[in-house]
Length: 210
Image 1 (cartoon, rainbow, N blue to C red):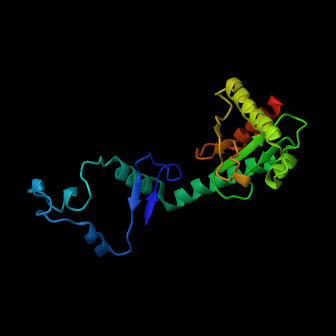
Image 2: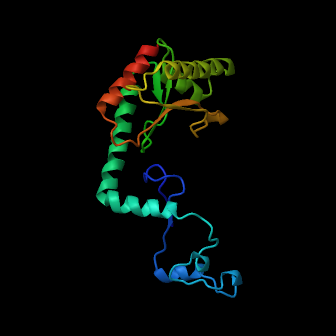
Image 3: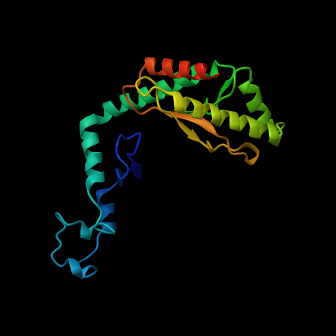
């Protein structure tokens, strides 16, 4: 199996691991000096030329994984993941309480939250139902999607980086009812310092827009 330590492993992009059940299975990766004669001085004890497909990769990825595993530990990872999921669930609940908002991944576990923000007076839940039912016209859908993006840009242009969480905007959350790609505001909880105050301010900043 392979593990990607990027993001939820709190590692940078090349941090990953390849794991086998039995140590001997790693022998399938080995090569002989006859196969790589230009590494005639290679030694299994320290030279990756004999047990990787290619030997010019930097070692910072695996070192970052080992540093994280040793520094954070299993219980540390449990706490970080639990906090990320807990904060995501808190935000989902708070946003879903607003009539003009709709959380699009309400029942999906994980640290990510995707949602719509529409002008006050719009019933976001009803509009989402119409879209899923296939009863929303193309013209109406285009208008609503433009409103969602406009409000996101408005917040991004007016946020105070000292107190406001920086969000992202996706043009497609992956769920495509009737082949329609759904845009959304997006928050991903990875920073262990994110607390209830950050969520309170995020919700308030949404209310201030509309």
